[in-house]
Length: 121
Ligand code: SF4
Ligand code: SF4
Image 1: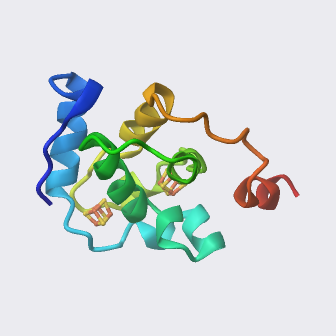
Image 2 (image 1 turned 30 degrees about the horizontal axis):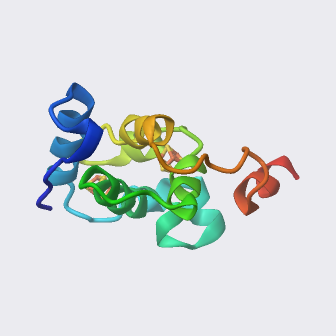
């Protein structure tokens, strides 16, 4: 996947790590198979492969929408995707960094979305 990092992440260590992961990902989807939020939602954007796409858009300069940040922020940071990825890509820290540093709207408080409600009960 071709990636040109723009905006505040350009020329940063995190930007370089994220760009490397985005370029290396082969979109095999093995990470989706072990992702609890993807299993619950059945939604590509609630799994690591979809979050990679969202992160790519943001890193390339697109202003993240509230929905984009919510999809990234609903990641549980369990890192199952990273331990399953055959390439050993360390990807979750990249999009959590994006969520924290994004100039866009704040994500909804954890637990207020469908995923949080499903886990909280
Ligand atoms: S398992 Fe790794 S290479 Fe495959 S889609 Fe997920 S992050 Fe990309
Ligand atoms: S770290 Fe996030 S994206 Fe990866 S498997 Fe866990 S919930 Fe899914």
